[in-house]
Length: 81
Image (cartoon, rainbow, N blue to C red):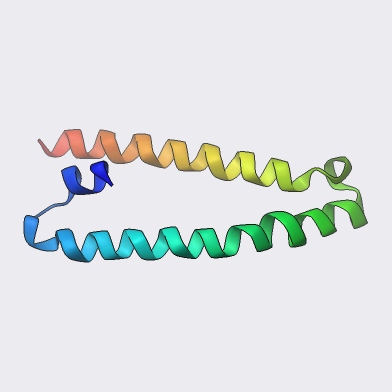
């Protein structure tokens, strides 16, 4: 939330941006258990992908992509200054 406040383009847009961020946080918290535990685990066990650990691979990929996106946001924001 600190990054959102710091890199929002205009103070008048802060409420809208914060609302969107909260929406996507809630959406990810609602959907991630479904994806990680039931879907990915069931598929990986049935088809034997990664020895039943497809869910761990997906979580690792999502985490790395999120880290790369966060880094890119900071880099792009520093170019605007």
